[in-house]
Image (cartoon, rainbow, N blue to C red; front, side, top):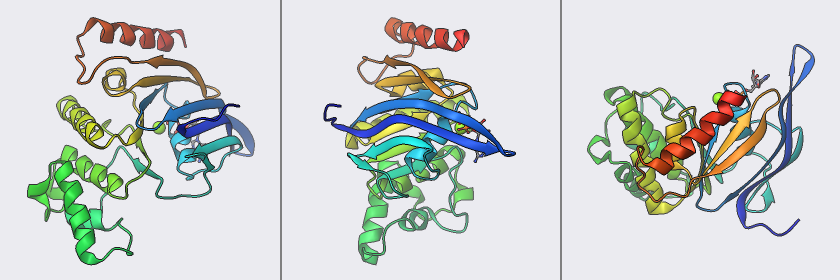
Length: 251
Ligand SMILES: Nc1ncnc2c1ncn2[C@@H]1O[C@H](COP(=O)(O)OP(=O)(O)O)[C@@H](O)[C@H]1O
Ligand SMILES: [Mg+2]
């Protein structure tokens, strides 16, 4: 195979789970290459293995067969190369915004440096006025911003987002999508975002990977060659939406 410049390479990946002593194939022959600086969205029916795929990339699960390479190196255990964002912000309720972010920064940095790093990322997500707030003083959207700052402060090569805005109302969700784009335009961190919201996938990503179920496979990949920021009512946007919807209806 030719040399690849992809930051993330997935080759012929299979994942089986044993459920009540029975082997269940969850992912089957996944091939995926993601270039540095790309935003790739993954959509697919519930249970098709999207979360499992992200968990394999971060080594929260072990591969049954196949390969996952980050920067050309096989993944072999959790590392700072990847950060994950979940549907719930998963913050420590007794720590302030700043403390929640400092918590994940390595102790190799002096206290003052840690503080400076935390403040930089709090500013990036627009929460400078809430440095000393604790999570329950923040709205759901603000808590999710803290989790984004916490995920980025370790400077991961890849940011993995698993339905990150699924628990937010439609208005907050759109704000957060704009926020993610604003951050991405600034630092171009490679992102893989799992979402059940097709508009969100098209609004954010360079490519939408459509998965099928039983077992989980990549059915189709759709490129989104539209300039940012994107207009959700634009004809091309709607055309891409229709292509993706068609895959869902046919499955
Ligand atoms: N730890 C596990 N043990 C057994 N089965 C699992 C485990 N994790 C996920 N599964 C199964 O794998 C399938 C895919 O799950 P998941 O990756 O969460 O799907 P998605 O995120 O696309 O909804 C489901 O059928 C689920 O029940
Ligand atoms: Mg999931």
